[in-house]
Image 1 (cartoon, one colour):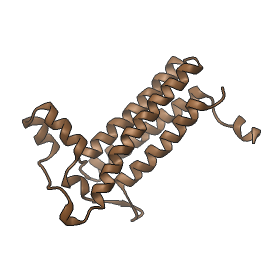
Image 2 (cartoon, rainbow, N blue to C red; image 1 turned 60 degrees about the vertical axis):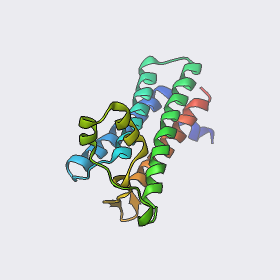
Image 3 (cartoon, rainbow, N blue to C red; image 1 turned 30 degrees about the horizontal axis):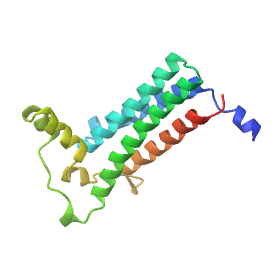
Length: 169
């Protein structure tokens, strides 16, 4: 067991790896949007924001090289970004599993809302989702929706961030 723990990278390296993982997740999302032509819904965009925030917090921690208390604070902040992202992934998964007659009506596209509605209405749309968020247009291996993959990613990132927060230095 001690040999296994000795193989785990230090906190600074681990934070850089989390940042790289978050960057890869965003690059995959952009590939799916611009190459595979899968249009993201409001909840998808909200989840991307929390992946970016988690990555930036970990990058800041790696650059800053804080004390052990600082490492814990950065890790808990990054973990909270994962919890928030998982909430929105969970909301989207819930919408995707509703019976068709209970799915909320689809609204206008995000670009239209951003151009024609106040900021608070746009934020409300991003945080609540609509019928567009319930649509599953692609599945990984024919099994997992993008929202389900996002949930798995948030759980994995959360677990690593929690490990970072409470590991022995």
